[in-house]
Picture (cartoon, rainbow, N blue to C red):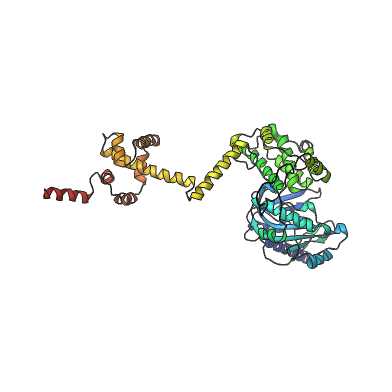
Length: 491
């Protein structure tokens, strides 16, 4: 009996390894989360690098084991820590509609796959329902709005078959093959259909309708042809970026946000609800975020102080509340907080705004626009970037400092105007070089010792001016000396 039990356990581990390695191949970067549901209903989680996970699976096998389909840049399973988006997925709770999983899969094969939806790479039979998984070429966090647009489109197409709207966030975990679902005692099985990885943009082009941006009815339509590709889910993109900004702000302050904890957690919980579309998951993320403060709030206070955020999110998803809000001129129900208010509430400084993406003031926005315009004009002219230009100017200055030092040694009593004539620059430039030499405290000697003499010789030998030659060699060029001697003989 013991031998049989060991064989069954080994088989479960092999099933789990195949499942994990099929989703997370050699292109995987970041941490993968493995979670196990405890008797209290909470998850015990651990985070592994791809090369570690397959070896550690035997410790996790058993009942109610899950793993993340996407990866995270640090061991923390939250939306704002996404490293790679590697899969698309929809959880079909078909048991709630009394549809057998096999019948649902057959219906999709006949009516939907390769028509309304691409064919999934694998199907997880989780015990009572189905999970459809599509593998995609890894894309970074910045592609989250497009990724979410595809997820929501798939969710809409599969809503009649019990698609779970709470299972479409990027930090979602699903059951692992070989584990057991304690709700019905059935082992989780996986059907592998093909190994082709889709490209997210190709799915958008082939399966999604043209996405149109929201237009405020009070504003006049802009002239000209409408854009071919609309900005994808402006509101969702805004919530994602603001969520990331609030995390960045806390890190910039090293977690010392004692006077702002309630406000920060309220904003974080609201934006998490908007992004995750699951109030329980958003609350869990908020509790995790609270632990990053130097002085965290008690868990009960976190829940009560941020409860209004959850209510606002529920109103945001209410059609009647949205209609009333739009009639009043708002984009929709829920909180529509301006950057000015956020900056005022959180006392965000100008220096901190330079590290944020969307929570910025009007002056900071104008500064970024100027920088973008300057870079665009520079690229249009074919000019080098400002960094390359400054590096080149620095090199030229070092060369001129070297030449100036030589000239001053050769002509110690020469004035600035005379040195300028020798070097072919203006007297003002000589003054600048002298000041630079004084600030650098002997930089010229350092440059002379470090610079390769051969490279300078190539430069100087290529110069026709005898002054540069005399500065370096302390004498006139040989051909000039020969010409003088021959001229004196002829005379």
